[in-house]
Length: 567
Figure 1 (cartoon, rainbow, N blue to C red):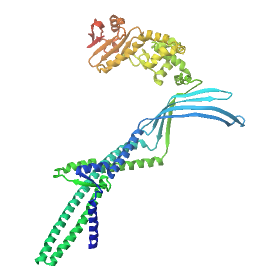
Figure 2: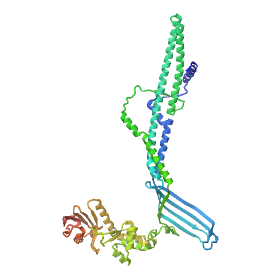
Figure 3: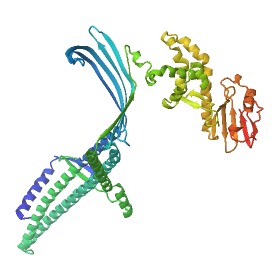
Figure 4: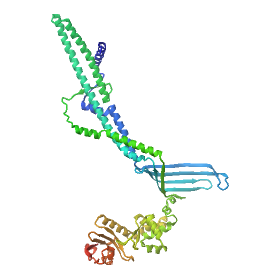
């Protein structure tokens, strides 16, 4: 640095020093920890890191939202059309204009769900339309699609959902780690800038002290030169030294100001703030394990994640390129119910009839007979005066509305069977609601209710049997649980539970009203249980239980090492 430049710098520094005596800046005393906290909260780099992480966070939330069902309300309201439409006759090819004069309104609700594994999309929607026809043929028509299920499956195409599932969580984790790394870098920069200012201030103090000492030495040398003990050359050396010290003071002021501005930029302050560092008397002892530091660095850094994400993106691009170059096909399946009518209630009435096509009357009759307790095949055929084998098979296997039951431990090819409606709501509907729709239409609800109340106890008997069968199954103490009845249907046992490993069993009579419980009848039914059904050979014997239900259960031997508990 030449002399002229140093003199200029010194002049600028002295000007700044003199200007510093005027309170233009707001001073703030700040420790190292406060400086780090301020930098992490309001510095430009910290704000940039935070906004980058927020962007990554919401991108990940958007990905998570894409995996959730989406709800869409759609409609077309007040669509008025009065126009002439050109039509061509298919008979003679002539053209004519037909008048259109109507008002259409439609409203629907759709739920859609992406299927990640297959890349398909499932839709479930319901909509309702109203058409008001004006003019000479004035008419009101309603059209509804109460429930429609649609599935779209692309074939041989790129599965964006699958790759997003692999990449997006890693992208979010990388964003989180980058935020941590950026904040740590902010801390490092703040510490570096803080101690740069401390060093600049200390250097300034040293330069000032040197200047003062040189001034004192020059005064002494001037007096000694007057006495003749110091030569003029030695005195001029002190003059030069004083000049250099004054230049150094200016340079130190500039360095302090530069360090101050750099620290302010790290802390997010402007030039009007002057930070006064407060250095602790002692620094804390820090012990670091190299292996621990290396292990955490490898685990928490973004280096490995960057490589993993790059590999996944490359594989995703290859899969997309192959799919775009190959054959593109799509499978579209839809199932739904629809109805038209002149009134709003009509479009939601008898929707199940469409499922049964033209034979819905026969199917409904079968369900009504079963709901009324006629569960044997012969009873159903007798009531309906027709062979119902095909219809019963369709209800069981195709429509899955009824179950075919066999007595416990009966042979697979045995002919002793019964049918039941497995859904309690449908069983209730065909027992009490469907046969008496005329009462509902005439608002005779009290009469309908009295019929339900008078027959409800008998109706819920079978529901209670299934409840107890499920409860005994939950105990995990029995290998087989069910009920039993003979070929003629005259003797029936509500619940039999056996454990084929321990040769123990349980036989129970289930009644809603305890007054209707007869242990003597139960003993008679037990006595006629066929031995072969239990698979125990001809030595199998059954002895009746002596205790009544109110007096507790009893255990009795029934032969071949078996014991049965009678409830």
